[in-house]
Length: 299
Image (cartoon, rainbow, N blue to C red; front, side):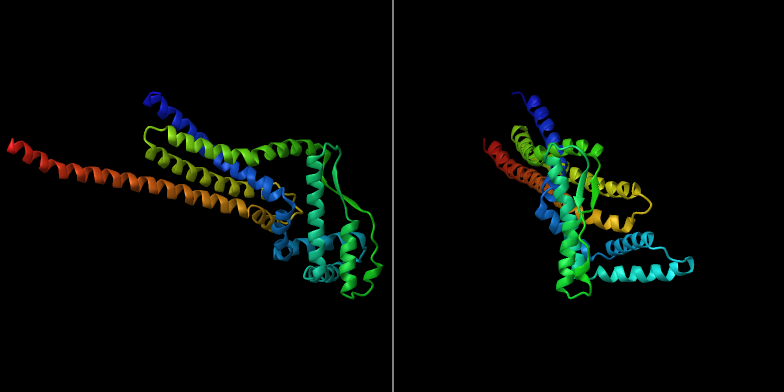
């Protein structure tokens, strides 16, 4: 294989590796960070104590209660304030954290089950098990009248039927890409370096390309956050949604920073070793020059 062909092939492989690296990180995060029930539970648990999330829940629950309770106009302000404070106090209890965990996991399990099955129709969650857990928690806490809380089978829609088919296709792609994209990126990078005429230069290009891909991934996360918050309905708290987005993408942001640091470290190492190698060759050449001159003089 001629040097020109080797250089072209190496460049193509390295470019592919640098493109697949952020895509592989994204697909792996989506599949194993969000798709895995245990990791999802660990990720969402801290949000139960987030101030913005609790304020948003208190506001939504208060609005729901007041829609069902007819209050005279002049009493709406005091009643609203009283109900909001009561709900806000409830968000500091263990029963609330139990409800948060149960509701989140019920929705997550329902969505993942629908994505893996071929069922049609909307994805719904029955709130009866969540209510039962909260009732049991309040009863153990000796809350008055807690044992009279009705446990009714109330379903709410998590994912509409028209959106399910699209999400299912994306999910199946992620199942494959979450494993093979990172593997392909590593194989392409190693092959590109081994094929290259100048391997040090290939390592430098791989490091810089990886760092650039990681930086683009970080930019994509930030842009995705802005677009997500911009598309929210007006009745949804943007601060609470931003807190949820930040928690869900925290691992992905960490991976992007690690890839950036790794790529820069590899590039700097290749650059420094290249400079050192040129310095050694120059020093050896200078050391050989007097010896050759003396040999010619004696001759």
